[in-house]
Length: 369
Image 1 (cartoon, rainbow, N blue to C red):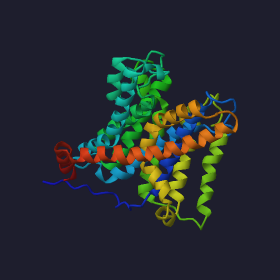
Image 2 (cartoon, rainbow, N blue to C red):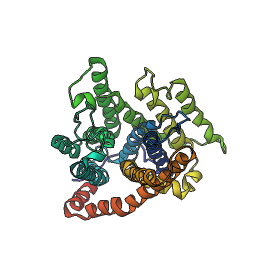
Image 3 (cartoon, rainbow, N blue to C red):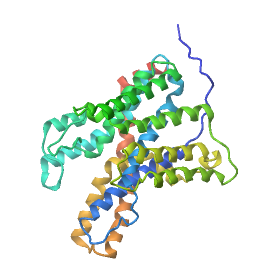
Image 4 (cartoon, rainbow, N blue to C red):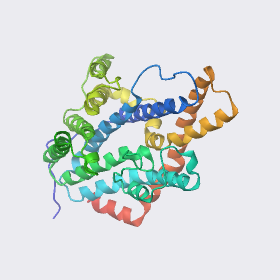
């Protein structure tokens, strides 16, 4: 007997190119922050005069992740095969490129460890990196061998909870995701849990996924909000005000990151997705959509690409004063372009190859019934 799930309402599907643009913005933000940090070692001027917290791109990523998981899986809550379908799709999407760059980093550690500053030979760190398991390295930081992968450790934890909650009907499932994540964050916050992996997994940062889950649920229920032409930009004042009011640019702020950066990130994502008119969604510049498509590649590959550019430039060309700005622009363009090539040449073929494997193809077929 085929079990049928009756939804509270048939959700309307929108073209959400705005999500791709937001992904592009988040990846660029993280990359620019790291590039400024790298260039500060080679020049005497402060390029980062804006004072923007570039690392907050990670918080936008977490909110987007929560939103997308609900939006793309809303109809699958409570249905047979939903969990296996979800897990299969997440593995195919996340694992291949991450394993590629993790393996590349391990190769560098083994062959040329002198070029790395914060990564050392540690077999257990290598193993836990592939397992997305939080591991404390030699300096006390909880990081995988590809240090950027710390965010994916949170992503995989969120996916595990989300997959379990897919067993429930949609409203109960969404409520369960929120309740479980909030419960774990409260445990860490109030009890001060210091034992790995729980001290990492239960960080209040996971509440940023909850912000996205709420946005995704209400977006499916209510859809876009129509405003007069160009008035759709007015809701963008909310994240701007929150950014200033919460002192997001103050690196010494006592507020936890999920409030200081997470709240403005959630307001920003919500303002764009809910209020951007449908015609503007459809006419989104193709370059922004393409950058969104390659945002995961940009996130994982940017240190490799601009690191190579900076090394070559500083060995052959001046890098003081205005030359440092030239190096910044060249590094920015080369990194964005190089990441898109990584997306086209490495990421897409890896994903498509996995989808053709019998095991994954069979699992997708079972999940589709």
